[in-house]
Image 1 (cartoon, helix red, strand yellow):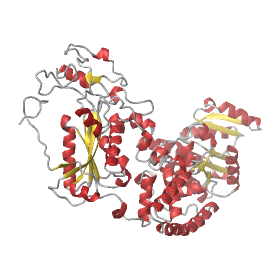
Image 2 (cartoon, one colour; image 1 turned 30 degrees about the vertical axis):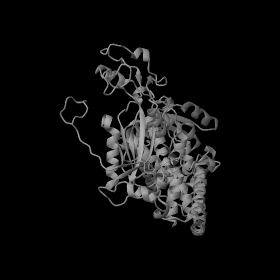
Image 3 (cartoon, rainbow, N blue to C red; image 1 turned 180 degrees about the horizontal axis):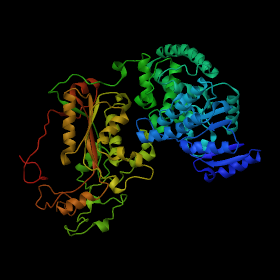
Length: 629
C-alpha cells in the first residue's frame, strides 16, 4: 500500500505513468495532492488515511528546491524559499507521525549538506538541517535516516547540472540501479546520515582538500591509499627538485615546461600536451576553478612544492608558471636572467628611443617604408575602405549641411586592418572578433618594437615596462564590429583602458598601463608621460605612441557639419589653396629607455629626448582651435 504525495497530485507530470508502473509490480497506489509544507493539509491527509484504517509504517521525504547561488548572491527571500521547501515538510512529518508505529523514516538529502558546496548556499543549509533532524530522531530512540545523494544520471538527462563541471570535480553520475542498490544497503544498516555517491577519489579528494585539510574522508580506503601515495611522491618531489637544480637554466625551463604542459593536458583530459601552447592562457584552453586546483595538486605532488590554489590565475600561461616554479626551486635569480626592474629616479636624464614600429596608409608597415613614402612624395590618400560596410554613395553629398552625409570621401586608411594572427598572441578567434582593431594593431606593433630593439618579449614578463597609449576612436561596436557569441568579450574588446592594458596583459608587463585621449596630441602626451615614468623610476622601459582606426564614418559626417573637411581629402598646410583637414588612420609606437640603460644594455639609440612639457591654451579662439603662442 503506497501513498504518493505532491503539490499537484495526479496532475503532476509523470504521476499517472509512475502509478501504473508501481501498480504493475503489485503495489496498491494512491496519488494524493498535498503540500507537506502546509501542516494543516498534511494533518488532514494523515487523518484521512487513519479513517480508512491505513497506518503509516514508512516515510520517504524527497522534496527539494535547488538554487544555484553562493551565499553572497542569495537574497533572504530566496534563501528562505529553498530552506522551507526542504525542511518544513520534514518537520511536520516528524511532529505528526507516531514514532512507535514507524519502521522507517527516510529523508532524502544531498552530499552538498554533508560535504558542502560554495555554489548552493541555501541548498547546503537545508540538507544539513535534514541530516541533523535524522540524527535528532535517532537520539530520542526513533527511526531516522538521511540519505545524502550524489549525482544521479537522471540529473544530467534533465539538464539540472553541467556534466563537464561535475566530472571535473571528481563526482560521477550514478546509474539509478546502482543508486537503489546503495539505498538497500543504507536501509539494512544503522546510520543516521550517510552519503551514497559515485566518486572518483583520485580527482575529488585533492579538489575537496585544496583550501584546507580535513579528516572527513580518512576512513575511505581510496583516500587512505591516496594519502600514502602522496607521501611517497613528496619524497620523490625532493629528488625532482634536486635534479632540476643540477641542470643549466635552459634545460631547467624545458623540463619544467614539459612537466607543466603534460600535467595541464592530463587535468583537462587532453590526449597530448602538444595541444597546449606555452603562451596560451590557461583560461583560454578551458581551465576553471576545479581544473586549476587539479593542476596545482598535480604539480605540487611531482615537485614537492607548496603551491597556492590561485596558481593558474596568478601565473596565467605555461611559460609564466614555469618562471614562477624556477624561482621556487632556486633557479637563476631575477637579477641574472629575469626582467629588468625599475632603477633609481634621475630627473634630468635623457631618454633614448631604442625602437620604432608603425602601420600607416599607403601600405606602410615599417619606419623604413614610411621614410620611402615621404622621400618619394607619395600620396597615401584613397577612397573609403570596402570592408567596413560604409555606403559611399549614400554617405556622399556636396551639401555640407545635409545631415548624416559627408562632402569628402577621401582619407588615409589602413585597408588591411582586419588581418590579425590571433593564435600568435594566445587569443581565441571569438575574442579576436570582439576586439577593436586598434587593440590588434597595438599588439602587432608592440611585439615588433621589442623585436627591433633586439629584446625577446618573453624576457620582459614581470618587468616594470610601462605602456602609454593615445587613442580617440571608440566606435568599433557602433559599426557592428562583433559576431554572434562574442558578447562576453565586448567590454574588454572595446573600452579604451584595455588598449594599454592589453599590451601589459599579453606581454606580462608590470609598469604603468595608461590610455589617454587628448585628441590630436594624444601620442605626444603619451610619450611625455612615458618619459616622466622613466625618469622618476616607475618604469625601466616603456612603449609609447598612439593608434587610430575609424570603424564608422561618424568623424567624416561630424566634421563635414563643421565645414572642417578638405573636399579632396588632402590637407594643404601653409598653401594658398588650403581648404580643410584630412582624416587618416595609423598606429605608431616607440620603445623608450633611459639613455644610460640603453647604452648599458646594448640597445640601439635612434634618437634622444631631452625634455617635454604639456599645457593648454585655455580660453582661445574656439574650443577646437589649435594652440596659440
